[in-house]
Length: 477
Ligand code: PLP
Image (cartoon, rainbow, N blue to C red):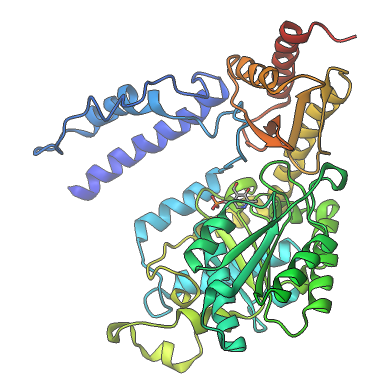
């Protein structure tokens, strides 16, 4: 009876989800909710119900209580942050993963989850034309982490572990990690967790906010002269604010040449833009990646693999295994002891792990690499469409060039207040965008990448920008 009840409710749930996506396309929901703070915490009972209710009653509560408080990240007019694109194939794979509910910490605990992860991570590396040093047939390999921040923690801890072993220095406060001032704040958070210092190297508009090797090397030299030990450099392909791209090849060559004797771990964070490596026309940004110890990107951002899925590749898997190989007696098994299998618990901080490989496998199988590439190209073309509108209007300035699916713009010669008023005005027209600050100037970000977004949404967005700009600075010439 329990199974039959699930079958009945499950069919209804799939219908509900299908209808939800239809409704998103028809703009039935506003992209942003209009609830007040505490709208649920103040009204819901303080205790869980003692008695069950029916599925139908519960779904009525979804309508009245949950939907009004949902920010619709899959909405065609969601242009905030970076996209969290999803797809029906990935969702189906994830459904199956939830059904199996395996905890894949070792091969013995979950052979299919383990082996499929190795397979799809190698497929993904090949689809993105990543250097062969990152695939599992050599000494490297890929592992699925939850988020880019988790990946950052894993590699920074591995760098620290290796540095202690190689230098004999146990006071890790002497260790320094480096990144540009545009790098994601996760480096600061994770370096704090690892107990190492961080240097934020200044960038400038002149260099499109990319980290300059000479600036990095100068800071590293200064620190070594002061008795500190550089152990980690994070380069970014596609920074959070403006998608700036650090010069990956020359950064690595400079560090390797200047600090050959030091155990400096080089990590590339391409959380958002890594997916662009799927398409040949973007691969020049990734040149020199084989010189880096690790590379990470989030297929859950732009590749339609539902959250969460962060792909971490390392050249030396032993660097992770050396650090994370602990475990109690009940985790011992013949397969692990044979040394012939991968136990992914030794590649990450937690023990337990979801069967995330299924959603990528489903996506590859049901859409093909071509389907994924089509989505990337389509998103970039829509961003380019918006960029062309902006470039043709003399009231606007684009402080950084568009490289992927993000367009950054501001009203020329206007103070920050005017940029904020513009942003509020546009969001008030049924869109969701966020701003950033570069060189203390407020810049509005238009992040395109929802599979639901159509050219018409882009054109409507541009019309909203024009209307709001008319109000603030008058019509364009
Ligand atoms: N790195 C970059 C460049 C990002 O843009 C982001 C988030 O947008 C992150 C890291 C952090 O991502 P996550 O939420 O996966 O930790």
